[in-house]
Length: 551
Image (cartoon, rainbow, N blue to C red; front, top):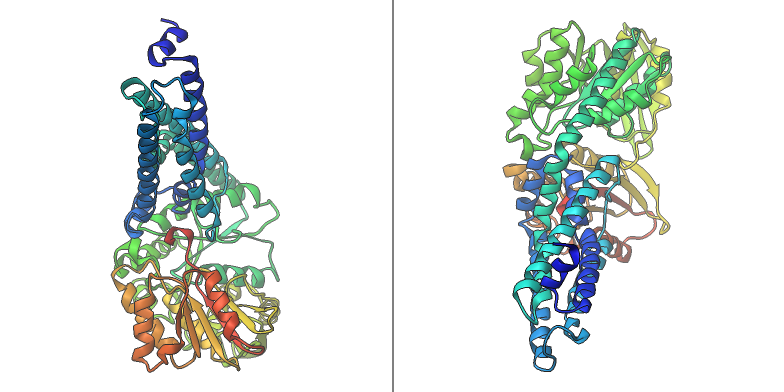
């Protein structure tokens, strides 16, 4: 049986065949954009299926509900249109009987416009992996579209094309199928990159690898340590927040050069054994643990699991005869240090070879004295907050043991610069001061931000969605966040529904004026509210900015 015979067995006329093809192509193109959000979330969750599926539950299947409404309204409009027109036009030979498909196209276009008009903190990045996934996704979408049309044309009349409306609600399954189809290839590619990175690191005999992990402060400490060590060594740090196996592999293969003497690897984790995987890959001989909190508690399940995961770096370093440095200014880090007696404890209380005293923090930065072997050196930095002094102390202890002099360490400290979105000072066009701390806040980070805010004069505003990924502790942590803000702030604008009740309760409990607790549906709306209240010389803290998987 040839193609023309198959087509004639399904379609009454050549017009039907032409319309079938046109509808299939248009629908497939539309569904590529309708499914954008699902592909974006899969990428944001690191292509981890468990995290991707959790997103549906955490967002209460809101996106699936929107897809269902798109399917339902499109189907209803096409059925009603088909039935009504069927009273006037018999058979499927009239072009007018296809008018209902315009509703499907219209509703899909409105869905897409609304989707892309929404704020996106991290738009979909068309990496090689995502490109391969999209190709398979498009192929499956085209097949599902064809199948839906075939069933309608083969077995139904007047409303035959309406069955194409089931395609949107099938998109979550389409993404999952595309993921499973591409997963074996991606695993091979990933393992190849990691194997090449391991081989390259092994070939560099003189390279020293430093691993940095912690619930908070990893990137800040990495940048501080890199700047200080650059006074004496050639340094290659992982860029931005490259802290996954592929991120580290990419850095090693593309950035690490033979002339480099130290490779600083930031190590991130969302579940147990993540750090050990990274250790086995880059094999650090020096390790830093910046602090242990309840960040990502939702994925870890308990604080004990977080401590165990951060301890994987200490365990690897200890088993391989290296040096592990732990910032013990936090309670959980102290517990971890007690399990590793050979670890070097560092704290502002005086632990460690390097000591810091006479700390003065202002809105313009910090000054302090650093002491090594009885020698004192005055230091200054533009970094804000006492927590950054703690980060500097951790890095200084490592630098001292690697042979840097007191003067070299002080020179490095003076060259430190603010990391974007981490207590970054910005002057707005409206002349009020912005403290941008919108990069993934933690409980400890939010407390530090409020302390920094308290050093400024003028009315003080906080714009925040609150703290997330804290599991069962989320309400209590945001309640405490509200209590922390109450004595410092004049206005609090909460730009999310997720934590509004918890933050508001904490603010009111601490005696904050309820009329100064404002709610906005998005960051852009919050800024509009701010601009109606703030004046020159006021200061506003942007504390945290939820990733796209919370909208």
